[in-house]
Image (cartoon, rainbow, N blue to C red; front, top):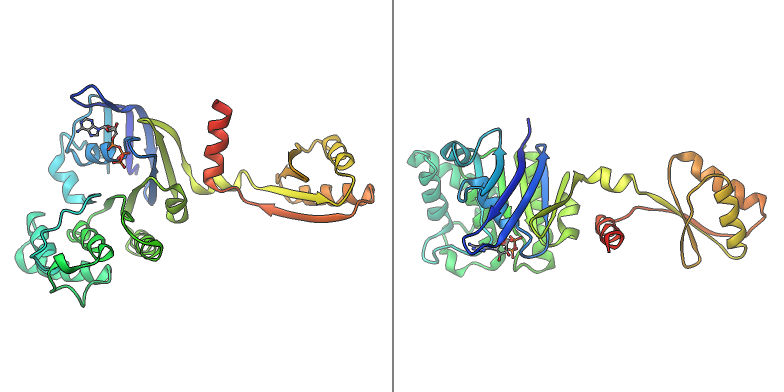
Length: 304
Ligand SMILES: Nc1ncnc2c1ncn2[C@@H]1O[C@H](COP(=O)(O)OP(=O)(O)OP(=O)(O)O)[C@@H](O)[C@H]1O
């Protein structure tokens, strides 16, 4: 089943700002990273998925449902962690999450049990009876995550879950999100302006820019297809480049390095054979995996 599908989705706000423009994407269940700079349209997409906003044009579906027509059904199956801190300081985490569970339609005792369980999952079980106002930023983020989990959703929408956290807190939050996605079998859409963060945990990446789709693909497809071998010889670089080109290998340059896309295991043998044939001193031959950020940087350059 498709987790999220949009077709020519466009959202124009009252003041005439186009936040999303002609966005067509289909995403399978799993951990999905939604990345884009501030103002790219990520929060707008989340609000459309929740039925909090209606599209100006085009269509959107989540879990096979239309969020505008089937709002109640969507909210029953989707958990939402908002970006900004919106927690009443005087309530304890247990009271707050129980209350939000009740609002989601759970009976009182079930809501209490589920809140306790959700707070355990996010590592706040011990602290659950303390007022939220005294919590650290990291703990507040975890309360927001627990309330999104309380009604046992099929999909979590997390808007910038690492906001305001220090590096250790960010790592802990990402590990938690990954655990929820893998161990609990809940799909997660995690929104971030930090590509480097989400690429570590997501199966699929959707990148938007200025409200338009930049790229949507499996992370594995984005990286493995672009593995390259970096070759450096102490002398004879030109001769080696010529020889590799004659072997039909596409050779790129980066300073003294020759970069050859790794098509299959034979690429290694061809390079080693050429080095031996020309009797050159091999300084290094190693495999590089492009980071996803480099793929976007190259794409932007090629458009410049
Ligand atoms: N209620 C609104 N009325 C008018 N314009 C809006 C409204 N909400 C968002 N926008 C504009 O729509 C565009 C997309 O905003 P959105 O909040 O969806 O982006 P974002 O990628 O989530 O960024 P951020 O991480 O900064 O929230 C921006 O230009 C923003 O200023």
